[in-house]
Image 1: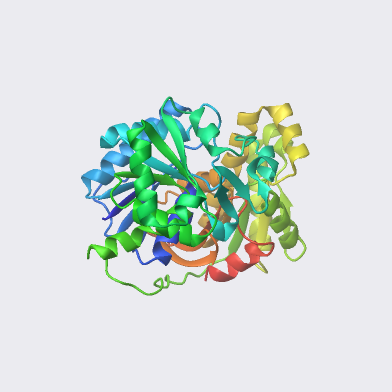
Image 2 (image 1 turned 120 degrees about the vertical axis):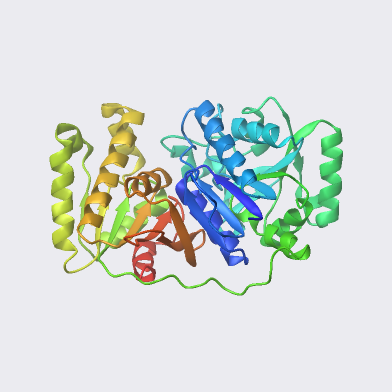
Length: 419
């Protein structure tokens, strides 16, 4: 293992694994910290469900993952979070990064969630989603981590007692040497974290080269694109072309959507127009959880005899607010995740072998319920979302999608890719 990665949610882990695979690293995603010997791979991405849990729990899980990765030979550690920097003023990005720096005995690292291929760019320290500032995007309505400030220097500074600085685009466009020189100046000034501007992939390649000697790197999946080249330069990583195809699976295909992002809402509407779909009603789950889940499973089992099917809890912001008011914010989310996970488990028992899941928290619940311990990474379906195949039997083909990823027809494209 060359690169050991810690991701704070399951779809984020898959996103990073996709990036590394596309750039020539044999990559395996594990579900939680493995108990035994590491799978054979150039990079291992440990998927945690730590983005929105209590900060001390997120720190403990992340440090455990770091120790396992180092014990199994990782040369460098990568802490991956969302390209929209999803967090609150309490964390969890800052506290986890602080703990990982301390664990590795390191004094300095970067923070760069940029992912230009998906429209996430950083300029003058401000994060943009497409042409809008983060604070003007749909992320301002996120039910768990509403992002109301686009200035990442300020956002991170509220999460850590350490100094946060900036490497702005005037430096980045001059290349890796200029970036590395700025790192040295910032470190000498007592800065522990540098937000790095990036507006296109070449910026991330320069940044990756400048980060070759850092024990810890933090960022979104895009910030990792320059790292494989560093390992190839030292002769540790051979040149590889393409991603090996995954083994095909037989069995029905279902989409399970818990995300309430704008992109996912559009994807739900597109699939509803073409294939059978059923909504999960929170009130019905509260009234009789088991019978509601059983009814949805029976409905899906019948629908899947003729076509793919969609089961969704996705809803617009006003409906989400109404549900949270009635049942409690955390309770409502946990109840829906539990329901979707139970539906997935029962459908697999009935022979379903292709599953598309929308939403990071939902993906974590589904994968955990299915007892999946690791995933092979296949070809990209959409930026940030590869096809994957579970280890063990039965082999299950999955596409785990972060809420805002994918075009309007993503669900249909993903089902076609999971063959």
